[in-house]
Image (cartoon, rainbow, N blue to C red; front, side, top):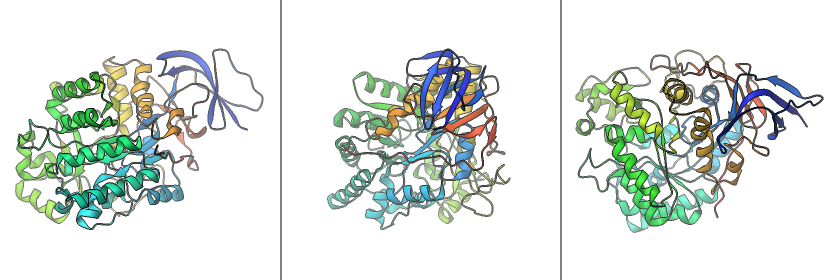
Length: 492
């Protein structure tokens, strides 16, 4: 049995909302003791963390990073559990098997993919548990239509089998099939409620942007939660609500006040990232959001789309190409304030929507560190959590440290308590909790990634432990550390 003692840090318990000076004792993969007096134990590894903040590692519910390189960037952002729940992967067993075979730096898990299930039944596209294949599907119109009764039963059956195989819920990319019948969404919510699993929705268009939408996207989440009793998670409220975020947050707040199981996440950037073939990036759709083609930048090449003709061309030639969409002007204090309001909303969860790294030589992954130059991605892949701490704790004082860890660790873990009993030991810092821990320098924590240098790691993470093993120690990465373990769901 191995013992590590983190000595004399500012220990944060987000469940109790407390901060104390204490030793944290880790034995094997668990927190064994938290002591206000120094713990003396022969043969223990003692790490002095005086003046540093010690808390449960961050749980990212919304990360499309399925690589060692990407997970290492997220480790420097304080993440210890990395989950792809908005999109998911299919087939789920293959996704878990391939991740385990490659090795993972962080804990990992996946939802059942609504879009892949529909794509298989409605478009004949057989999923292969690869995120890039799923994004290629997004520009395919065949899967976006309303299903026949037989088709609906077929893809619901696929989702049910994925839940039985260990999926952590159902990821619903409704914003990419926004004209499909709302009755189908209710059917998904009923399936999730019966399975004891949450849903994670990228909502369809808001009524402010498209008065002809079959149903307002955010109200659809609230209505489904009320009608079915399902746990409904609203993904990246900042990017799908944009300047209507106050109205949307009011809708979700009313749903929660009425007793519905609705949770919400946000990330601290005024630019999103998706496939250029997405429904809402069609040239005729852009004015509804105050966007133009030049609001779109292709990640792989850095090309800013010049005009409608070029946008139509790239959507035809490579609809799965990753792009950045500038939906806010981060130079404008009014837009920055909207981002802060989304993060400050009561119980809003921080989640990154981290994107894959794209290399000029098209490699899928690398174990090199530091990362070779030239990779492209959204800067949120590297900096979401550190940026949230910088903005909300250090610069604006809207959160104290216990509240910051509640938003980044405790609350996201609780979203999965019912479907994944293993999550009940995560997001907490108390005896018996999993030893997924982050140690931060509170004076140094900040994001460093930018659009032009998106793989620059965040600063301030001094130590990071996953399952009791150091991934980062004294600010340096252990290149041999692959302690990540699968988190799986269990249908009730």
